[in-house]
Structures are given as C-alpha cells and as structure tokens.
Length: 452
Ligand code: NDP
Image 1 (cartoon, rainbow, N blue to C red):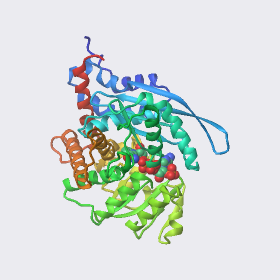
Image 2: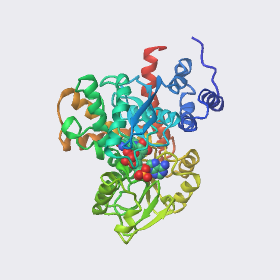
Image 3: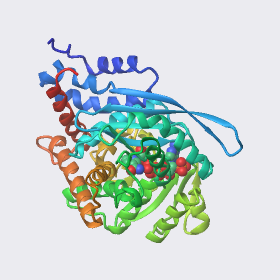
Image 4: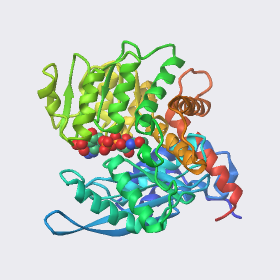
C-alpha cells in the first residue's frame, strides 16, 4: 500500500470541488471538517495510507428518484426524491428526511456528511444518511401531503430497513408526514418494523423524541456554561426558527430560568422584549404545527412584540444565541455583531446555520460555541433509542429517556472537551473537538474493515 501523497488542505478541497461541481453547501461542510482533521491526522500515517478522509467525503451511494403525485385539482406534479447513504461503518444509515423547495443534492450531501460525524459523537451505533425532496409542503392540503408521502415511500422503501437505513423527520417532515410514510411502508412490505423514527406514540414512537433536539441543544449550552462557572438563569436568549427545534429550545431555556426574546421564520423575526413565556411558546407550537401559520401573527396576538419582515434576529442584544432554523442563516457580519453585543455562548440547533466566516469569527473570539453536529445530536440520539425500543418491543418511561438524553449530551460535551482543548489554556474549541471525536470512531472502524 502506498502512502497518500500528503495533499495540502487546498489541494484536497480542490479535489472535492472537482468531483462535486457546484455543490457549494457540501464543499462548505467538508471544508469545515477538513480544517481540523488535516491537523489531527498530520502525524497519523494509517489515516493517510488508507485515504480515510477522502473516502468519508465520497458517500457510499446517492439514490435519486422521480416522485409523481396528483394535487387536489387533478394536476400531475413531478418532484425529485433523494436518499444519501453517506457512511455505515459504525451502524445502519440514520438521518432525517427534509421536504423543502430548496432541497437539492448538495444540501442533502452536506447534511449526510455532517450526520456521520454527529451520529458518531453520540457514542451510539448509527451511521450517517439524509434524504428528502424538493416538494414544498407549504399551502398543501393534508390529502396532497399524504399522496406525496405515499408516492415518495413507494420508491424509498426498497432502499431502507430497520437494520439498513432508518430515516426520521427534518424541516417540513414532522409527525404527520412520518405517519403517512410509515403507513405506506407497512402496506407495501407487510412488515411492522422500526424503519422510521419520529413515529406517533400509538405505533412505536418514543416519548421525548419531539422535544429531544431543542432540549439537547440547551443541555449542551448548559454544560458549556457550567464548565466556566455560569448558568442559564437570568440570561437573555436570541433564537431563530419557530419549528420543532426552535420552540423546544425556547421551552428549555425558559424552564432553566432564561429569557427568550426572539423567534423567526422565512418571513422575518419577532422581538418580544417582555420575554416569550411558556404560554406564548404553546401558542407558537399550535399556530405553526396545527394552523401552519406564520410567525408574523405573533405580533398581532401579543402586543409586546414587534415583527421585523425579511430580517434575522442576530442584531438583538443577548447573552446566548441558538440558531435553530436552517443552514447559512448567520454570516460573518452577524457573528461579529453578536460578539460585539456581548453574546457569550452559541449553541446550534440547526445544521450548519453559521457560514464559514461566522465560524471563524466565533472561534477567534473564543466564545463558547457548540456546532450543530454536537449541539443538535439529541434528536438523533433519542431516535436511536426509539430503534432500540422498537426492536425489543418495549416502551421506556419519560424519566428514563430524559436521563438518557441528558447523559448523551453530557457524553458529547465531554468528548468535545477531550479533543478540543489545547495545552496552556482553559478554552475549548468545540468545533475542533466535535470534528475530531466524530471522525476518530468512524475512521477506526474503516481501518478495521480494510479497503472496502
Ligand atoms: P421545522 O420544519 O419544524 O422548522 C424549520 C424552521 O426553520 C421554520 O421556522 C422555518 O420557517 C425556518 N426556516 C426554514 N427554512 C428557512 C429559511 N430558508 N430561512 C429562514 N427560516 C427558515 O424544522 P426543524 O425545527 O425540525 O429543523 C430546524 C433545523 O434543525 C434544521 O437545520 C434541521 O436540519 C435541524 N435539525 C432538526 C432535527 C429534528 O429533530 N427535527 C434534528 C437535528 C437537526 P418557515 O416556516 O418559514 O419555513
């Protein structure tokens, strides 16, 4: 076996760009990881010889397919579906399905790549995958969504399975969509297995799955603060998004005595200087999930708030920030503004919400900064617990699961600390810690398999 020609980071990234033309989100995700891994593997010959990082950036497979469905007016609609199976070295592929108009192969490849590191970081036996469609659920009737989900699963079913690949929800895919897809899988295969997570409690779902990502992101924040002798109590939080992750992150901040002052969606953000209380969060959950409404209506319902159309919340003064909407929703200038306004900690509920420049700003300012692959891993961790409950045909109690979630987030925090520290300083680079800890477990499994 010949040693890899120790390419520079730039040469490596040029290769990634050449093999994946135009896939800018994927390039960005790989670059962020490679910046740390290149340094870590510098003196580790075996990772070079076996071209581990290069192999990790080439998904095991990318499946794409046509999804046809009929809308309520009888028109035939054509969408594209994907499943990116990135890496199953440490367990079956696992990762959500996203239904959003902006979904494309680049977005799903970045998400599947990130998912591989995230799932490894949880310490559980799950590999990385991601999928979805450019179907836009906004404004569609329940029956239209059902027909789309059934058509999507009619193709996807042949590529997934309880020990093969176990999808879950993500943007645009919640309990309703999972129910329709699980029903179709069961109909086609005549099997009742844990092929999807995020299911309803009546048919194999797990308690606290819905809350897990948002709660987990706040547990991560709490652990980072505790390490430096601080707590969430009395701190002001700026949160973006108003979906599953954002509302549950807000809920946990409020439980822990913090004050949440913003939420957002793709139409803009609301600022409520009086604080978004549990009662107001319950209103948002109902408004977004059941009425499928817009966050702007919050300012009509609660006069203490103001709606800022087409703007993001990062200019509002805060101590802590939780980006919980989507990728690249926080740029370098916004990161600088947060730091300048005194923000001491950022925990990412969303995947890759901060662009590369913003990541560098947070790193250089040495604030407490937990990247999505560490901070939002609580959701997939509870999904893995749902898989365990399904295969043993048991349901665990809420108390058990809450404890497991907290233990998992503590484990993730501690793994980041183990790999993200530097001699002579108390500061932890959580991005570096998460990248290296996530990489190492997968890389070592790949070494054990030889060249496959
Ligand atoms: P939801 O669909 O429940 O909510 C998404 C939220 O983000 C909505 O408020 C939505 O607003 C907003 N949003 C979506 N796209 C944009 C955009 N282009 N600009 C501004 N706002 C936008 O999704 P989740 O809460 O489940 O997911 C949010 C993030 O968390 C994603 O990055 C996802 O990958 C990540 N994540 C989710 C997990 C989960 O368990 N659900 C697990 C781990 C990570 P609008 O209504 O206007 O579209």
